[in-house]
Amino acid sequence: MTQIVRKVSDLRALVAPWQRAGQIVGLVPTMGALHAGHLSLVRAAQADCTRVIVTIFVNPKQFNTASDLAKYPRTEAADLALLRQAGVDAVFSPPPEEVYPAGFATTVSVAGVAGPLEGSSRPGHFEGVATVVAKLFGMSRADRAYFGQKDWQQLQVVRRMVADLNLPIAVVGCETLREADGLAMSSRNTRLSPRARAIAPALYAAMTRAVGDLRAGDPAAMQRCYDAVLAAGFDSIDYIDLRDGDTLQPLSAPNSSARLLAAAWLDGVRLIDNIPV
Ligand code: PAF
Image (cartoon, rainbow, N blue to C red; front, side, top):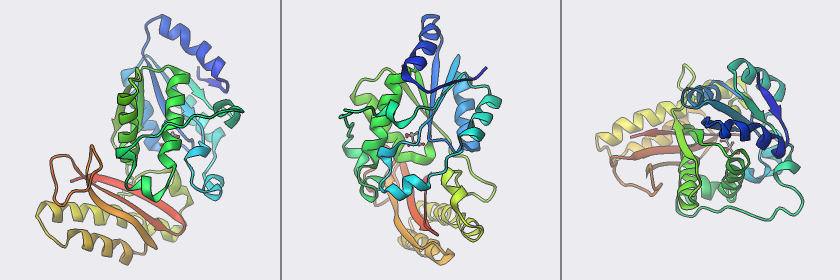
């Protein structure tokens, strides 16, 4: 049976006997609006762990504007139905004051990997992510945590934080799930109009072509990718960049861990994606 828990003390009471019995506890942190990508994280956690907890918390600290936070889809009833069906052991879905009680004064700030790309496009975003993820790790005391590679930079920020703070948890990055036309699955996709939804796969298509061009050493690869995304109907591009996948430092040519990362705006929705080069 899936237990729904809203208080940290109840989560602790649930997890403590599992850990006393030597069970491996897996955590899948989410902001809800669940889709097949989240469920693939759940399945990965279930394959590795004895118990799986999914968290649903729309973290106000990681949104740059009040309007973006307000627009974030909230579908708790449907999410809980999916998670019951998936057979997770517990869902932790706390109200904001349980996570950030009065007097809360700590921010986790990761330098380096958190600086460029999403870090400069969305100031404060990764402080919000690192702070809430550190709290979710501490609240759950899970042994393993599962994140999607779609948020590649977020995954590197979490890995850095865990290493730097010696947090006793293993971080697992799982493959991005895509729609049949290549669009990376995201809770934000539900906000795309039918016209925008038809345009959206052009980002992945342009990036895929750029990877081939970059591997072939074509100096026009990046410009062609920009042009293709805008020509397809995207309104603007925050970045399309070739980076080292571990350090997120810029690269002028692919290396063994190179990744192409992109963020672009379509009809008021900001889509991100990344692929190995
Ligand atoms: O990737 C997300 O959904 C969020 O950034 C996370 C990791 C749940 C933290 O709020």
